[in-house]
Image 1 (cartoon, rainbow, N blue to C red):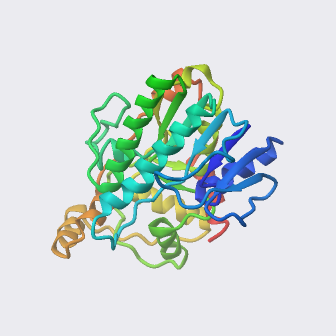
Image 2: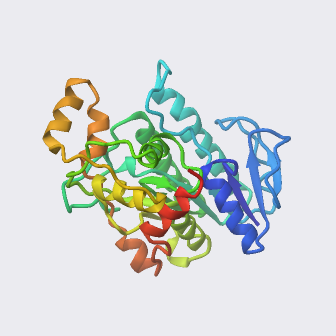
Image 3: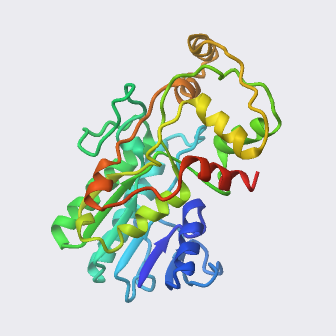
Length: 311
């Protein structure tokens, strides 16, 4: 049997739905004991931290898919963000992994983040799994520390570990900045991003789930790290144009020079936003393609159409 943590989250809900479609019964672990994930056996485990008791959740489990995490937030109000991220993303993850190994779990699939690699790439020089880790924020650091701890547990116990590092994930129910962007485009609000020539990798929810499922029992996935994306890099201009097409509206993009956008963003102290809008972040998925014989099943165009159905 498979255990899925974070089953009520953005990725978890659709992963569990995919299992239902495959008539695969899974056990889901949720924070609250009275939460029920449709068509699956659910176990409440309380807060995710270094003291969580996973005994009931791990009974007869052979594969753990660990999605639960303290996620990256733009404006973290915590006085010590790294400490808060470590409680859940490091201590909580490693506590679960140690108990999983002791319970006889064969494989532990961990959803990490491309932030372990860093925040940006040079144009047409994508991140690979062989790059030296370079996390730039507390979230990225916590994910990297969890990865290192998991690989050590794998060496010590023989439990296989698989690590996936996705970039920004989009799909039906997407929230935060991506959802805000779609609302701007749907309302045909003019945006100053008509001539942005960057390249960024994204991953559609269905493509990420496809790779997660591939990693459940593929022998070559054991103790490996994989980067994942749609395999199609887009400029901000191309992304907005694609969103407009998926929404059935006209893309109203003004040809404002990229340098001018960056200048005013820096002037306003919005360097991070400028980086995401005009910077590069590319991901090379050759390893997953070749080692796992995996190809993203959904194109960016189709992924955007499915995403926009709920906007």
